[in-house]
Amino acid sequence: MILERIVRDRLHRVIVDRFGVAPYLTRHYLSKPPHMPDGSFPFDQYGDVRPGAVQGRRRWGRYLHQIHLPDADHAPHCHPWEWCFSIILHGGYVEERPGRRDRRLRRGSFNFLRHTDYHRIDSVEPDTWTFFVTGPRLESDWGFMVDGQFVRWQDRYVNLRP
Ligand SMILES: [Fe+2]
Image (cartoon, helix red, strand yellow):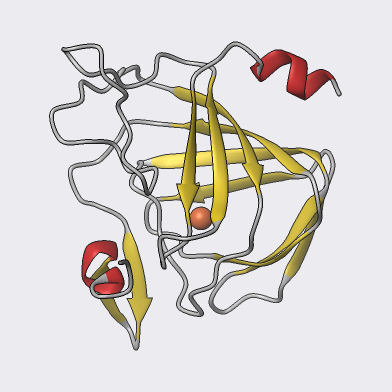
């Protein structure tokens, strides 16, 4: 597949699920990836960026995402950028957003989220790839909306990972 050829020599990051076990998302960097000043690998075993990593800051981030699993958490989450969007390249998914009817996004679909938008991916087709673009990274982290309250992801995941 052409997508696999595009990403073959690029740095990628496998982000695991909230239990720290199964691959949830593979992020292939099209824009400058984070790096460690000592040249070591910039991600930990969960796919999180390691402390001390220098972020490849650009105004816009560009990635190819392979989405392996839907969002296990039933609470919707926000993203840590001022805005971001996805274009579905292959496969597709069903998205939930509070107060909206669920949407099925297919190849060619466009999905835009502001930082204040919360969503959740309910189901994913096999071999789903998206082109994902992010705007400026915000100081505030991402998290979940739980009973109308914002909960930071670190607080939500506490004690879930080994
Ligand atoms: Fe999301």
